[in-house]
Length: 132
Image 1 (cartoon, helix red, strand yellow):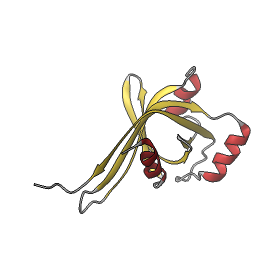
Image 2: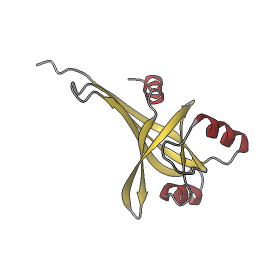
Image 3: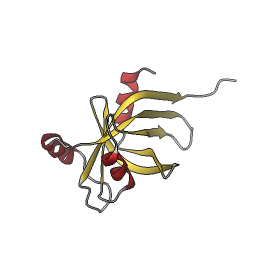
Image 4: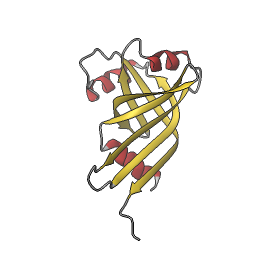
């Protein structure tokens, strides 16, 4: 699957998992997202571990992975996309306003911080029937 198709599939779902390093161990958080061009955008809250790591990161950002999928629980068919890249806080007021309008929090909590993940690598797989 090519990069364009992988990003199209990623944009067809609204939830995924962001993976980052917290105290030298992997941490995974479920989040909702939108795809903006090639970037994955998530909103989060003050005090979230990813916020502190992304704020403290220099250029180009903090390394993260982002995964989303659509897999049928009965047939086990579907797809999975994993993006590896750099996460940075969104600070531009116009971008912040646009993302706040487009990406509503999925939990009952204030989500005042926006993070943009720019992919360096995209891996995608289609889960298809097995032919014996």
